[in-house]
Figure 1 (cartoon, each protein chain N blue to C red):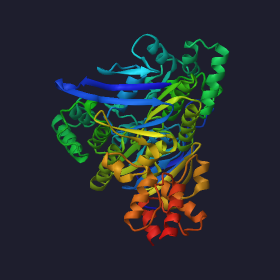
Figure 2 (figure 1 turned 135 degrees about the horizontal axis):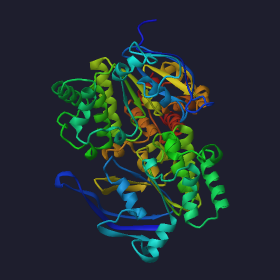
Figure 3 (figure 1 turned 30 degrees about the vertical axis):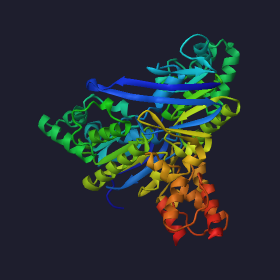
Figure 4 (figure 1 turned 180 degrees about the vertical axis):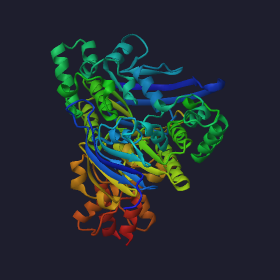
Length: 274
Length: 281
């Protein structure tokens, strides 16, 4: 096994005594990997994500992010810097109404000088395609632009891991595509590891690996081409395959196709042209 | 319930003295069925729902409910008594300390007896895959995002509104909850409600909408049968909208030389269209 940037072993969590919201989650993520975590509402995705940057204190099990032990109170500050999160509702994550001030808040809070924080904020806004937006009012931006401001706020602190928790579910398709592009660019240019929590199976299909959460556990993990075509597994987790795989399965049932199911529209086109 | 919008216009004060024309000469006749409302962020969808609901007054034009002016008198009373609006951000519509009180509030306010209100609340939550017994005593603010959205939808469905307005109801829902939501929308329409559902989700609209209205910068730019419009990937893209995934795949297959018959909107329809296309070629 190579280096791991996220290592979780038997992580358990109960919001109230007697409940089991996480039932012993174990997973590894390699540096620079793009992973998707899918699962139905209440399966534990967000609870797991909030452990990754110590928003939820570790109750049981072991968790290390960027080599920092989530059980060590002295490591939490650095751990939060190493792992940034973008949430579902863009409006709930701003601390300033001015774009530049909001993006610089993280680096300032982590002890950067004002000059360096401003430079980091400008570079982060440029990285998400919002150069020149520093003096704009965040509330006057579209939802998609707001999510990119939130991403810039995360990038400005130089995280090694970016967690996006349903970050595209409240923005329009154009905003989603712009955010996906910005995240992929941050990954390519900064070598960031991306953990994408989503119900969007078309988006999950573009990940290196997919983790399927079911009732507080990891029910399956693997390449999208293996995991996202398994109708029975996904149904047991309250999910369904991406459209391309469902169309392929129907073609197989109709006797009009054979072989492994594609998970993307591009893959479907390739398979049907082959 | 028949809702008529006549030349609706609304201008907001934006930042720095800027004036934003949120709605511009919108005229629509809504009477039964499910009308999908699409448009990019900022196109006026939410504002239009608020105007239809009587929550925001337009500065031009008027809204009629069954032929009566909805801004006053009998028309306003008819609208208030029969409209249900599911907000885009569910926590913005919650104000009661428990889920049980939240979902029964609208019923009790309409004079429904407590026992009957509780029974209808339980049924509405059950339709959305939730249990009044399990969640009734919890704060709606302490629920997960998906649960909040389902409670918000249930609290509106429980009142059996004659005019059901939904703003991005499927956002953040998993497939099971999404299917439950769409089934509830279909049921409401089948029972005679007039439904308007604003959504970016072309796949969801493809499965429930009879009619599709698209807004761009506050103006209606498309208005027609939902299947026809949602299945036309190039047309949708020309209007800055995302077509249903199956329609997008059909267009990509045709570009690659694979014949596809008709305008499929679902995975099953796409597979059948490919088989028919092969049969023809």
